Image (cartoon, rainbow, N blue to C red; front, side, top):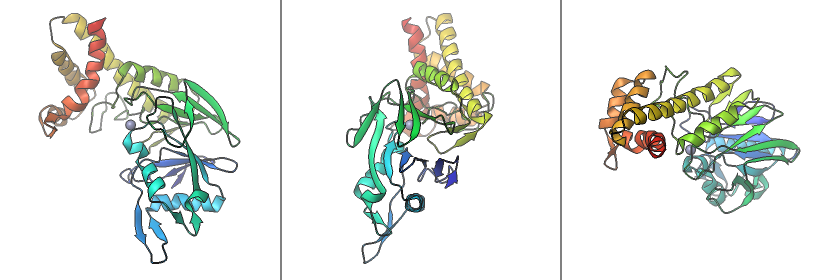
Length: 308
Ligand SMILES: [Zn+2]
């Protein structure tokens, strides 16, 4: 557990393989839990019925008990399974802790976007931009689509603490455009143009802390830089698609996508063996990683210029 600001606490740690990556925001008499993610479970059950749970989850419960405040709302930045799976655990397997009933500690309703497929326990649906006071604290929810296929991505800005939760929209895959040190050459997104305008919208906010859904906390200028690198990669994909479609009207889309992939991998200094392996190596349902992940994302931009 890590205190990000006076009112924001990070559960778990990015190195803990995603178990319990989640954040708590403290209000006057309640907490908001942001993206419960996955990995919480019952570890053991005693004869008297008392249970022990995953350490990060117990750490959160200990904090709720110490402050005598329940989780009153759970906010989801989007509905991808790796961000919401622990809801299932909370609803089905969590019966109580240290003599407290589950409803005393986690008596929650959901805050999600209008487009979210989630239906049960939804208290609020966010539109383009909603400024709401929850239990004494100002929350600014901003629709930032591009990453999720449901177009249900919402970012949350806390003006008082200057913390920005951006879900999975921030994926620079390295410290700069020219230094990609990730396992993929660019972020995962479903709608390229939307991701570009969402990133531009977030960069206009005055934040000091950036929280990505994968558990990272960027402090100071690092947050702005991470969003800028993510944006720069998308803009470069878009620029190459525009130029190559215009200059090569007879080339098919698959060929243009591969040219763009090779160019961006090279420009980013992405590991050459890994770049080749993504196109040729291990398969997901008979397809390469390039075909499953990279090509559809690039094709998103290519088709835009084919049609225009
Ligand atoms: Zn996601």
